[in-house]
Image (cartoon, rainbow, N blue to C red):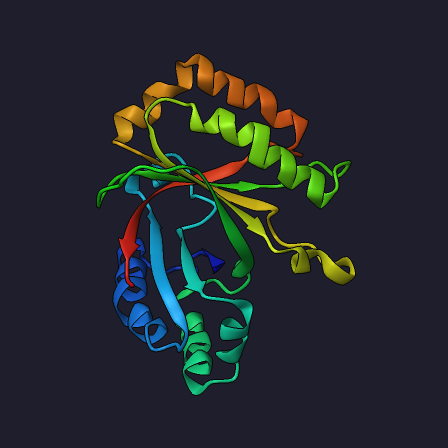
Length: 221
């Protein structure tokens, strides 16, 4: 299964609520017509993320396909062209990007609608190869993250090897998603030894502190 992750920032001057409504209704209706789409989830940055400053993203969109061939087959369809044209109506295209990934599930439990989800954006240490970075992130770091109390589900999305071919570099070397029971459970884990172990390990494979947003999911398909 291929997971395409799109990084979403609203058009300058557009009100947040107007952006959310358009993305959730008008744009989602177009995306649902794209052939070969297996699953489609929007993750909207929570209101609390705007309290002190403008977040890096207003959300992410995640689209799943069975394989790369199915995804590529949609590229030249009229509905894909219509969907791309619609992006310009509500998105800041200067910040619009996506990566193609495969998921590695580190912790699995049922989740419920409305649970807060942290989405973190990772850049690898330049000294590490892609293989070294992904191996360390998957394990041991994945095991450390899965042990943090309060986390319900933890998924790593690793860019496909083709993302790095011919000198290309993806915008991010990985996206981590962690679901929590509630906001209190998310906040209270910061002081735990398990969370401190996660922080202590990050310099071993990350170039910088991960940027993140706190979101709630809207499952479209």
